[in-house]
Length: 131
Image (cartoon, rainbow, N blue to C red):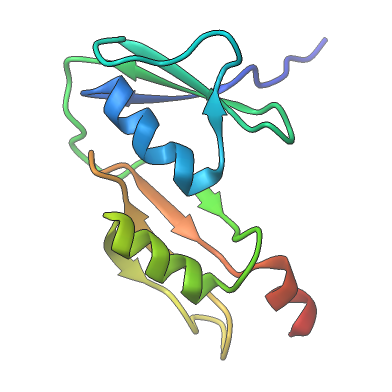
């Protein structure tokens, strides 16, 4: 017997605001027929292509340290650096820059969302195929 991952949950202070911030970052939408609204303590978003869901749930505790789990984002189009620039303009904060860690063109950049949840941006599939 095994289990499967039903959805990914992110603890947060404001579920609606954080779910709204993440939707354009990863191209997810509200669940059909179940829109997220201000004041909701739990907000689910879904990838219309794969069906993967992310649940934002309000908790009283603040983030206090490094995430033990995080998203690694791969641009659907464009390059890693173009995606990093887009996310920084959108309001992400750079935490660490590991570009070139394994030679030219390698590596990733660690960013944080408005509540400090860290995530990484890696190279696009086109960039990997070209290396």
